[in-house]
Length: 446
Ligand code: MV4
Image (cartoon, rainbow, N blue to C red):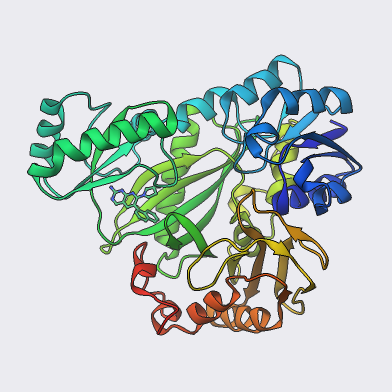
């Protein structure tokens, strides 16, 4: 592997370019016409315009990306997150053209990307799961039968869904059929696949996810958990590692469950196994993400392992760079996603950044993409930077985050920095008495 094409934009493209350069690899950026002035296009050794602004005509257009790979002579491609990162067809075409896809095998992207298949795999691997349907629910009778087994409330999910889209909570029998039909039609419209399944509903869970790493030589490791309970409309806003409510014993239990799942399919590359953790400390399998995640940074900070370099080396056929038995979680890390949006209404707020200053000093990292004079385009997601702090413990980490948020300056547009400042001052957040519905009870207005 000599030259890597980064099939993405924004901060993750910059993050991947940095990892490649540290490994002595040449980089090729692709960008849309709306991203001509973007940092990733400037930092890469070469950059190629692949189409107009809308991502459907550029970053999501497989033939355009494949052409850029061919023209540039790249021998590998990193998909980042979002866009084509969990498109099994992309990974399959790369294999066909002998381009190294820096990610898992297409078969694993495909099977784990289907929540019903992933559930079946997890069940076989002995991973704890909420009671629910065994496969696709097709008829009213099947839905009623599952309801009789698991009771209410229950949740209907799309097999092809992700990030919580298209989920329906059902609290009583009278609502079941209407909600089920709604779920099916939304799944078909949103994902091109109407298949749905049913699970017992867990009311106030925490979102805990395990970072998995596996090489081609049969070595598997988990790098502990991230707590991603602070979300709004399935958009994570703050993530941290370790979880304030997971002790060493529970970490090992969840971590080993995730490893069993990975081993059951012979998974290779980075991966994330998502769990719900209920108020009794029981954990339940949710889904597997077969890509590098936005919040991988907090795991890097507490383990000292560069996950993106690890992912690239694994794709080159190298063994894990560390001994899984010696992985240690040291200190505490937190990530605040800085979005170009109104801090109160959460409405996107693209525009020209007139002045920009990143915080620094001990324990502060910024994974960004913005510079003074840059215009945040309106066509893509609103995240412009990730502010990551690390401390010996959670208190020091939070003190650094508050200090860093106060230092950060983004003029010309609105950002959610005031939201993060308010959150970090909230007593319930500081005590980590949070769950995935927490932000519904948290307002900028009081
Ligand atoms: C659930 C649930 C409660 N019970 N499943 C949302 C994202 C997807 N990974 C799974 N999700 C949920 N599944 C059962 N059986 C609640 C959620 C959920 C959620 C999970 C994690 C983080 C934020 C969330 C917000 C709303 C609902």
